[in-house]
Image (tube, rainbow, N blue to C red; front, top):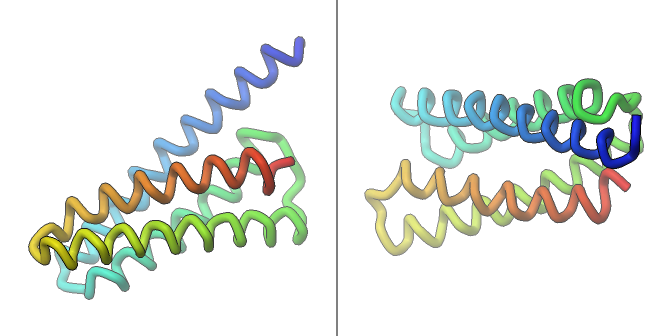
Length: 126
């Protein structure tokens, strides 16, 4: 298999994991928010579940890599920085428009994804 074909396959798998992870995270976040949990706790719970699923699926399915402590720690650092961007985005939107709880979650997810991709590409998955 050529390197280009292999990279393309990994990218497609990475995107599939991202879709599954996004649906899972949103389902948890929105279900908990709807049930009355504080927006930040709902968000944190959704992201913890999503981070675990993402690490396992990306390690095994996307990259075929062994799950190691070092890789997991780099992945967690990447997720932590991405999550900080997510919370900053949510907080900024809610400060401007307190009723935009659901929209803030979507925008926060976009910010998280952008930061996460860049950090994974240039740091965690190298």
